[in-house]
Each structure stands twice: as structure tokens, then as C-alpha cells.
Length: 212
Image (cartoon, rainbow, N blue to C red):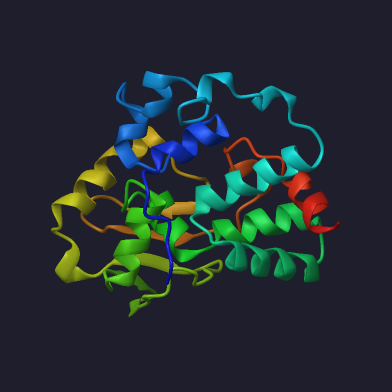
């Protein structure tokens, strides 16, 4: 499947906010936003007219931001929007909740990985179990009661252990009940709510963009 393979720090600078795409580096002074500021990358970045975006430009940037946070391609993101549109409730909130329920996001939120890209890799390589069964589909939708864990053969992986130990500093959501270092599992105790999503996004702009 096609994936963005260029420098991800450029994406944060393009959106003007931290998208936390680079794992622990995003929390250090070496973060590109900390070192170079929030102006866009490139030769003329400092001369950008970012603040003058209006209407369609603002809506597009908001959509791009959420796509990049969750590592989506345009077709995938559009499919999530259409699914959210068919559900009851507020479309924008439905969209964000569907994205939060992705298995790769849950693996990241539990703390098994330092970024969603790292979490996607763990899922693809078969390190993750859901209710004791290997699931290697990053887009798998978790539900209340599911237990997400690391398979026994991977439980001693130093990258997973280090990520799990530092996850407290990154924060864990209330809708996931996380075990200890010996267990390496998380149980979905509730569906995510809009207030559980800490990224600064305006989902209504995305709805307005796709509704045109």
C-alpha cells in the first residue's frame, strides 16, 4: 500500500503544529517545530502567507492535518468520512471516533509504539493480538471489551518495552484500561469521545469541505 515516505517533520511544519509523527523526538528540543519554528518548509517558508488562508484553504489544511495525524491517504480518508456520514450523530465527531478506534491508533495510545507509524508497523508484522488472536490489519476497528496485547514472543522486544515505559509521559486516554509491564495489554472499556481527542482540530471544517 502506498505511504508517505518523505521527511515527516516537514508535515508538522507545513501544518504549523506538532502532529507527533516522529515518536519521542517530538518531545525533545530536536523537534523541527522547536528548532525551526512553525513556518512552512522550503526556501520561501518564512515568507508564507499562512495567516491569510480563508474559506476553502482553511478547510483543506484542516483535512490535511487530520489525514497526516492518522497516516491516511485521500481515498482511505474519504471512505471514513462516508462511513461517518451514514452513522447517527455529528458527522465530524463520528469521523474522529472511527479514526481513534483503528487498531494502529489503539496500539499507539496504549503505549506499545512511540508513533502511529511505528504502531502500524507492529500490527503489519503480526506482533499484536486482539482477544488473543493475531490481527495484522491496521484499520481493524476495536470495540468495547476488546483486549489488545502484544504476543508472547514479542513481549521482550526492547523497542516495545521502552515505548511502554515512556507512554505515561505522552498520556493515555481514559477509554483504555492499560495493564502493567508484565502484562502488556490494554482493554477497551468505552468508546472514545470527542473530548478524549487532544489534537487541536476543527472537524466541522472537514465536513464543510466534503459537503461542497
